[in-house]
Amino acid sequence: MLPIETSPEGVRAWCAAQRSEGRTLGFVPTMGALHEGHLQLIDALKARGAERMVVSIFVNPTQFGPTEDFAKYPRVLAADCAKLVARGVDLVFAPDQSTMVRNEERTAVRVNELTEHLCGPLRPGHFEGVATVVTKLLSIVGPCDAAFGRKDYQQFKVIERLVTDLFLPVRVHGIPTVREPDGLALSSRNAYLSLEERLRAAVVPNALRAAVEAHTHGERDASVVRSVLQNALREVDRIEYAEVCDADTLRPLPDKTADRVLFVLAVRVGNTRLIDNFVTTEDVLFRSA
Ligand code: AMP
Image 1 (tube, rainbow, N blue to C red):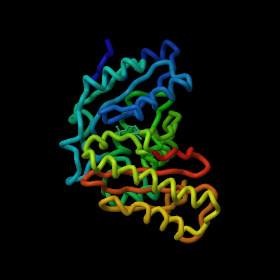
Image 2: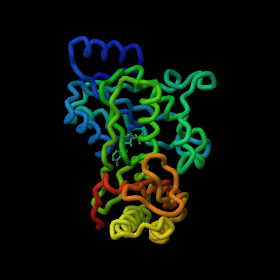
Image 3: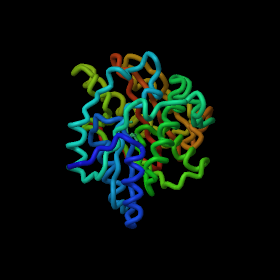
Image 4: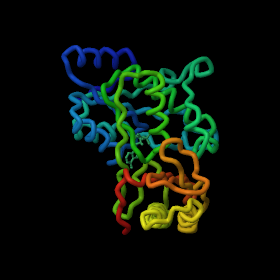
């Protein structure tokens, strides 16, 4: 039986017992509706030597805007737990909302600069909601290692920054994006796509690929590679942003690109918001269908 804890105190006690027996703890925070992308975060920490694995499942209301999909976000705890057992997870932390979200008007974690671009201005309060809850989760679990997906690249950079700046004693790992055979990044939100939208969504990875290939073939004019990316996205319903950025500061590049750059986008296919990215010199080019 996979133990499911709902209280921070219960998780703390379990994790403290593991540490006192000399076991290293790995931790993967999620919002549930688990897919292979989430599960590979677990595998990655195990491969790095984590001896006990904790996964949290918490749909964090503070990271959703008022018009976003908090109410309809899929909640499938039993199915998630079956997947976690199969992957060798040792403890699930599934707190309720009132436990995790309280007094944010008094205490919250805000990461500046990295949140000034891309999703930051489009989703006011989103990264503060993420940073505050992830800080609480890390404080409760106290893992040696925690894994985050590079699919949410801006979120990954924000968490790296807060862990460094708050001196949190945890190693943060950014794990490569897991994709469908046609290149679409796995996401719990892909379930919202109709069949027609799902087929059309393949333009997202293909557009990234086109921009990365132009860059790889020597194009160093930022406005040219940005146009390649944006033109290749013509079939989506709305481009929220499609940028070429510095991969560390996340600032859009005004003129010349370097060897290492971040291609990053957020689009709508139907009503579904999809994000994706690629860092040259770090990510591996996926094949198109
Ligand atoms: P979420 O449940 O969407 O909050 O995601 C939990 C974690 O899984 C985050 O660190 C995400 O970046 C990561 N993740 C989500 N989708 C993928 C994917 N396709 N590949 C790798 N990691 C992912």
